[in-house]
Length: 249
Image 1 (cartoon, one colour):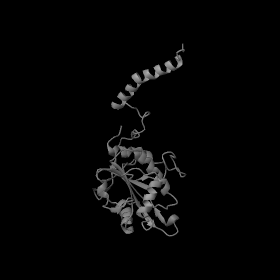
Image 2: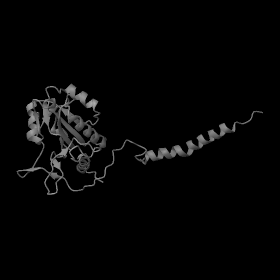
Image 3: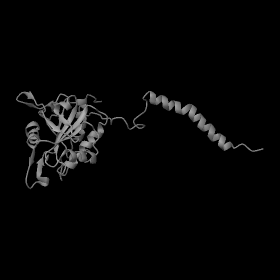
Image 4: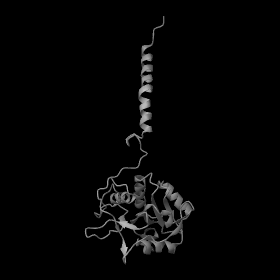
């Protein structure tokens, strides 16, 4: 008579018990959305707002400063205007794809912020090139893909140079200029502007209650400080985006 293979029977019994008891529990947890972040990476990164002070408006001549109307072509060939950002919290920057100095660092920080809010349809970014003669739709599309841009509300825009420079310098007071002899041929601000869902420029205030207006975009959260001792603003910017989204914890 052939002997029973007790080892095989034991393994089969364990698998059977696992199927009867454990798998239904896992299915039940998924159905009840009882999966923690350590088990699922699909949820947005959780933030804690340390500074709960309400954000300030930029007020000029008694009027809250709103984004100047704009309309440009994005990396996908679509016409994008300020109206497309209505109902969204978004960041504004001015850059150019061949920038050899601060732009790569700014883009890296914006990608970090993008990845902090991966599933927010009410969050976006507006990047305007200050070198539209070179930065065509195709160039900007490659730039976005090569830098890990995934947010569908992150538009890289190109168009009439005079309109872009007017938007930068008059609309946002974010300096941008074509300068012979400058690295890459241009000079521009390394700051980001934060815009609320109604199109108003928002910011924190200093110790005297004055709006700081912009956020430093060059220093990363990991670096904390630059070589001159300037502290990073990315942590504060993430918190303030969360405030405007209305999800601070």
